[in-house]
Image 1 (cartoon, rainbow, N blue to C red):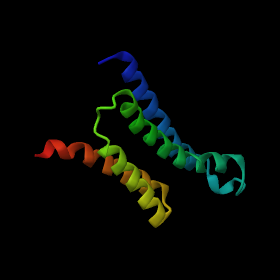
Image 2: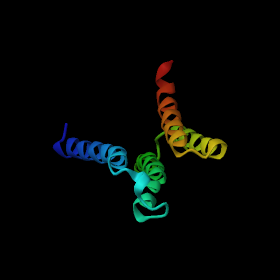
Image 3: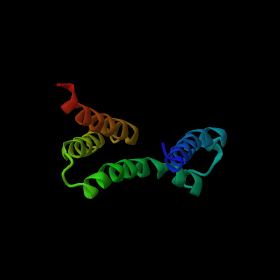
Image 4: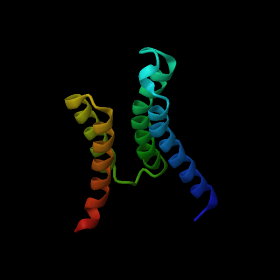
Length: 109
């Protein structure tokens, strides 16, 4: 495996961990309700969805022969769950699960 890929995976994991841990360590309850720190952390949910969307679109743009079903399944799950529950967490997890299941389904038979 390439070193660049491992470094990118490690940095992504570290950033994800930091986004989860830092708010709990900063005692966000003591910050202003509309302060810049709260706005920054509120924006990370939609940023996660945008990142997953980009990660699923890029391979399709590079190779048009790829099956578009996982992309559309994941996108539909995100939009549907967001519309039902208005939960970034549920929409992100549901979209990733739908994308993964749609990717695995051709191999199940």
